[in-house]
Image (cartoon, rainbow, N blue to C red):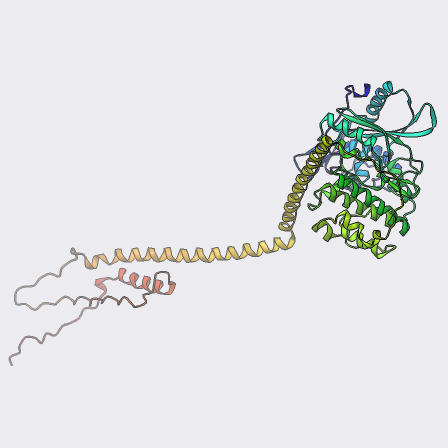
Amino acid sequence: MAFMEKLPAGKVLLDDTTPLAAVVEASQSLHSHTEYIIRVQRGISMENSWQIIRRYSDFDLLNNSLQVSALSLPLPPKKLIGNMDREFIAERQKGLQNYLNVITSNHILSNCEPVKKFLDPNNYSVNYTEIALQHVSMFFRSEPKWEVVEPLKDIGWRIRKKYFLMKIKNQPKERLVLSWADLGPDKYMSDKDLQCAVKFISSCSHPYIYKVIFATASESSALVIRSFNEKGTLKDLIYKAKPKDQFLKKYCNPKKIQGLELQQIKTFGRQILEVLKFLHEKGFPYGHLHASNVVLEGDTCRLLDLENSLLGLPSFYRSYFTQFRKINTLEAVDVHCFGHLLYEMTYGRPPDSVPVDSFPPAPSNSVVTVLESILSPEATKNGMPTVSRLLQMPLFSDVFLTNSEKTQFKIPSKLKEALKTAKECIEKRLVEEQKLIHQHRRLTRAQSHYGSEEEKKKRKILARKKSKRSAFESGEEQTMKSSNSNNSAGSGASSPLTSPSSPVPPSTAAGASTIPSPPPPPAVPPLPPNLDVPTQSDPVNSTSRGALLSSIQNFQKGALKKTETCDYSVPRIS
């Protein structure tokens, strides 16, 4: 088949659902305009970041392309006079930062093509519509019975997936939709197994799976044809949208927010859970449940895009469930995505954030019970319930399904092993990403705690205490050094008193009266070993001892008073 020939797909194996963060780092004025230097980061790694330079006119063009969303975006207004003032540029820089924060935090806007091209031009410069047309043209060379009616511009959220309205030449009234998609980062099947798998999808049938008319795959992309449903998807029903309108226009800012009736919630929910249970039992990986992937035919829901997991495409809600380490299997992913879908059916809009701390009033308490088991903080922390457990809950257990359509879904044994391996690889990448995000969150939390005002005060108090302790220890050490110095000086001063070279009093003639030398000082008896002798570390005793030694050192013999001695030892003869 000509479609299998090589074509330049421009494929980049990036996960398009990985969030991009943008920070306006600086600005520079050049002649009559100002440029803003922006740091963009993909995911949590600082190494995966780059700089872009944008003018205000670039922001204005981006804002114009997002006007279809009908959202009121906070782009700072234009200013013709005084737009080079320093204060004005600083104020505008803050406004542009706020604008980028709003865009990157919006789940739909952050994944749309204009935003990706603005923040990451190197990886999103390819025109995927042209590439899709090339592949479709190659396909029509070998399949002349098909004919393109019109391109369905941006009806989906994926950048690398394009849609075309088609017809069969001999059946001009029947409308078909062709979807072309580039292969994604989770494509782990061999080209041969992938071709076998997409052909299997076109041959299978199930009451709650939308029928595939034709499917084929190459080494870089895949092409799938289905019947075009005029009523659109479950999301179109919830948002009262037209199926052919652009994704941003349909779902970003609905005019009226209103959930479905309780019976619709119960019936649609039960049908979707039944098909998920069927796929789980067959070992077929899905992981792509959301309201736009559910087609309505009367009161029957049918699942779309079973091929997505085979092609390695990332899930619409991937940026949500990568935050929770307990959602680490495709079965758990399906349940988590079902929680988002049930919330949207109930309240007419997606949750503002996940986990959800408290739920608004619902048509029934049983609805809130199911939502709490999936989207509450406890559920995201402890793990998802199984599909079987959800089917047993009061909201769905009393729903009676009457569809009698036969099921044909026999997976060849060789393909089973390939599907199992692909599923394990998808889950492995998910677990690794969750681990990195968890480590990054812990590090960020520790840094935030360390930099908090309370921690800063604690560190200042500890620093003061440590400084006082160091000063006290330094004073004691200085006292000890002074004491040791005085001890050394005292020993040197007493040496003349005991030196053998001390002067001896002159001797007198024999028989003459002499002045005897003063008696030696009494010897100090040694202290008993059990007495407490004051140590040199005692500052009071050390000072007294030093004064005594200083007195001895400064002793002068000539300063003694002369005394007269009356000798009565010689006998007296009267």
